[in-house]
Figure: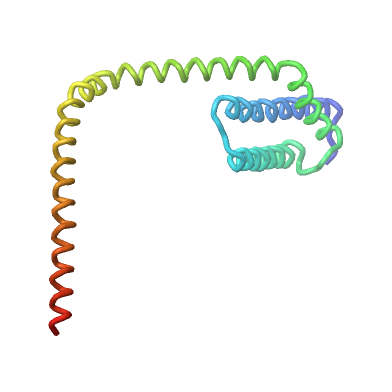
Length: 166
């Protein structure tokens, strides 16, 4: 389909915006990686998810806005949008998001600690009696263990005597 010049200009502008959206989406993963520890496999899975999502987004955009035609200036616009985003505001956005996430982690940790304070106090109050009961049970079990060993030896001796007699 032939697009008019204003339609092509609008397509270029929107592809630049799609490129910026791809950059923002990638920064989400950058923030996630900086705030939570990841293994190598988790990073690989995140990258796979990112590229699959970007592929679907670009395919959907090209299919509906560009009528399925691949135009060089549309691809150039997406690339330009990503590059402009990373050169201009990406570092600032990542720093701010990481700071916000770290602050939220501290706030949530403090709130959870406050909520769990009564439980921690109850456990601290109950710990000495439970520890004494555990020591008492441990002593009794240790005595039972010795008694069991003595009985096992005695039974083994009795079986040995019985075997000799038979």
